[in-house]
View 1 (cartoon, rainbow, N blue to C red):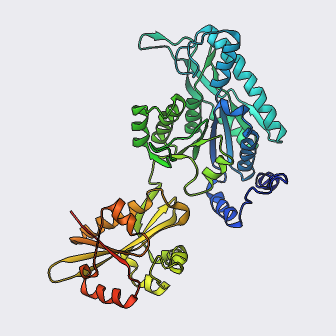
View 2: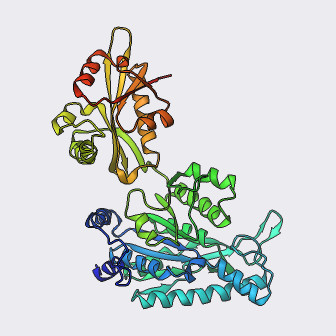
View 3: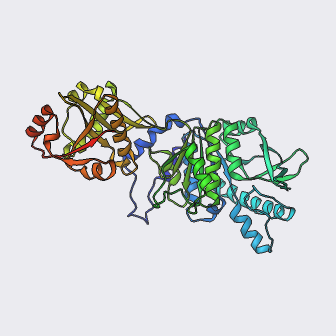
Length: 449
């Protein structure tokens, strides 16, 4: 392992003393992921527009970090921005600029020149970082042909990927670089779409991830980051073609969903203009970009006895701040069957419990111990946990769900449909504990339908 590259990427420049230094717990978080990523293939597809931005050298240093951790990296790059720029200088009207529409002879000529220039610059930058790289012609392509009555001329489609040649390079710790060009059996050069290249290469190599490093990131309607999407959600978003997502991001939604459907477990879309976006996305539970997932990336499950230490550790600070009722390890262990855990990639990030009380006239459920890690707040996890608790309460035949809160009662009211009530709504045995506690918690109630 080349630890020098790893250290360099986390060193704060002497001229930027105000920049926060990575904490030891951050490094421990990174190292937690290393065993599951080691010897796995990551296909990284970089938008051409990023290659001339000030932070591009840092992005390549992040690639060096990945290789130093024994992650096998394949690089794909786009050149749409460079093609449009060169066409403008030459006064050429492009038939298309993304490798998807028709590519006429003049557009192909401009595309080849722009792509090869870009390839040369990328190779120079990677060589400057002492990274062994090689441009590969591992893509066997054929003309896309006639689609909807239109001859796409010099636009190509990938027929197969020579995975053996790529595997040889990866085994020798050489990073394959794949430009958005291919060559058919007659030696003709054809223009390709870089997102499509990334997907085909990832499928051929059984890659663990595709990371689309884009000019911008995916957002919700309020402008906040869109953290994750299922395959179905990504497809639906692509079909809607909302104005806030340009053609570049729509392409990544389309191909990201396709990749997951065909077997790539995770596809990430990150904003390449953000500092350290690549590492932050890969080495944290929530990341900084958008992840499209094919399997249950997040799941809520019943807690196990083996979860008790993690539950105690997670909740300790909130108990000290009086946000949660203090509970010992033994107390949690005694009622572990009532607890449930929210996991992200196998790491507990939240929990809750549903206690039930049988009264003469009704059966009441109490939502207790609702908690989400501070680093994962404001991402909808609390709502998911409450919804899960409501489902459990209904399964147990309960008519109402009550919750006690000293600090989060607005969340229950405004986001989950609870109403503030008085302590008389509590079951008798729970009311006695409430009076003894002296916490003066708000009592909230929700009728389950």
